[in-house]
Amino acid sequence: MPLTAQEIVDTAGQLPPPPRVMTELLALFARPDVDARRIADTVAAELALSVRTLQVANSPFYGLSKRVTSVHEAIAILGFRAVRMLVLAVGSAQLMQLPPALRSSMGTLLLHSTRCAMLSRLLAESIDYPGEEAFTAGILHDVGKVVAAQAPVPAAADINWRERSDVSRERELIGADHAEVGQVLLARWNFPDSLCEAVGRHHHPPAQLSPLSAIVALADHLAHTRLDPVDDAALSALTPWITQALGEHPLPDTARMSAALADADALAHVLEHDS
Image (cartoon, rainbow, N blue to C red; front, top):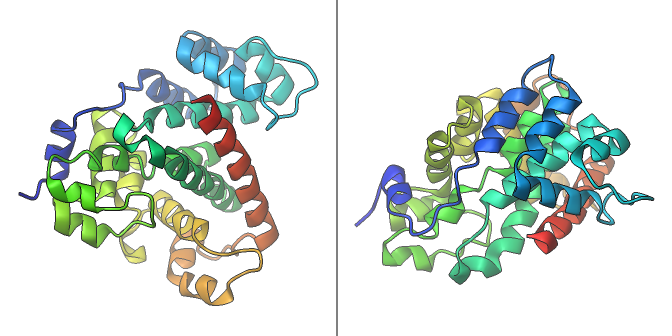
């Protein structure tokens, strides 16, 4: 029997642990007066997040000449902005741990999510929208797959969760799509309303999208679009999403988008290796 998104979350066999430190950090990042020490203290107080943050900071992705041993030191060497992105990436990756039977999909899910996050940040910053908020919405946009894939209906096993999403098929087979499930999940965890909405509506038509939802939706499409060499026809088909997300601002050039994707691929490799 088809289920609602709420029912799918309520009956899931395995949910990620509530990310209390993530919601606390997002609230801190939204404050213009927050300083680096407050952020570092918050991360350091959460052992698992702190350990994994340092693992990634010391990985080849950052290429540091010396090993950092504390979050405070990482901020001093990498900079506040870089560590904010790093903490959000690590914390979000922890929320996307799939049950053992679905673990083989982790790499694909994390790679696409990280690509969407990097592109979301690039798009947001091109219109002076907060980059960290867009990055977080981008990396969490498919978090509902972690739960929807566990829907207690046999049809859930007939969906290939690794491939590009077919939300119509998801709704037909299990009753709700992964975006709707993700919105319910983030709301349960007390994530900001704007993030919940962006996750829940990123497959809606362009005209129905809020600014953040439009950024994530466009980034999601771009993550599936060939950029090197550029697929001009595919980019042209995205015009309604580009207009909704960027307004009068131009789409970042393909070199910048390709560079963002390369950074995303490298970061996803590190996050998956350390998970």
